[in-house]
Length: 317
Ligand code: NAD
Ligand code: SER
Image (cartoon, rainbow, N blue to C red):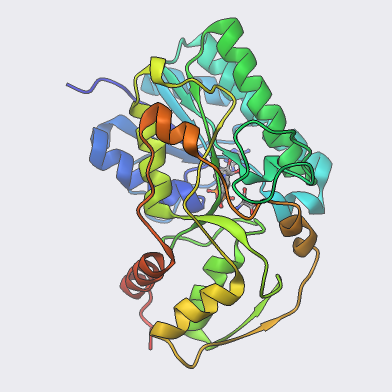
């Protein structure tokens, strides 16, 4: 019988919205508690209102529900963070350290803390960026993720906490809108293709970035969290690869389904963030250590996005 109780922090976000039902299916509805700054309109499971910068509130929720695992998804992402770097740093680091401290005092079994391709900067090889390379991020978000990776290693070594992490590429999903990242354009483009026939893209046509379809991202998350502890050799964060594409390539894939869709390009400050990130990621360590293998290529992802969006959007053509 499954005995763990999982708390998901930041459960209303792009990844949390899709992760909650997957965890419920895998482990049972009574074993998953969502939490976020605001209650969702129609919670799909036990849900707590929580500001994870408040250590006492976090501890109370862990105590109340006998939490044994945390998936910590609350963060300020790359583009949004640049609007107020000190606020983004404080939120990302305070919530992280509150989670690690609660994991220490409640002797939690496992903690999941995502990292990002934003840890990479100008010094990293652009194609097939290796797992181990110099990390010189250009955004406050990337700086906070590098710090989080180092804190993960520290808490694991010093206190033995079983912290696991993935460097997610840009996540493509239909379940909710993304929350202020540089890779958000790809999700926006699908929505605009359905509702307006035209999209103004804030990155240039040839900007190639590493991306991942939500089902692959969630599968990787479950795989790493369910792997035996001795298989987790990297305690900072694993490189994770799904697929890589440019806005121009995504437009062509969308045009297969919606030939009238067009796109214009008006690059803004997010272009320089994208230019500092890899084109593609070498995730051979994840493949070797715990058997990672993505399923979705561009064509398959595009079909899945239209199918998912059509099940949600009434106004589809
Ligand atoms: P998101 O912005 O969509 O969601 C974050 C959620 O955290 C929001 O619902 C927000 O309300 C909540 N939140 C913010 N401050 C909070 C606080 N103080 N207490 C509690 N909740 C708070 O983010 P996401 O895309 O779901 O990302 C989840 C995690 O995955 C983040 O750590 C992010 O850095 C990482 N990640 C995401 C992507 C991506 O493409 N989505 C890529 C790489 C890494
Ligand atoms: N999708 C995220 C962003 O663009 C990458 O971590 O910020």
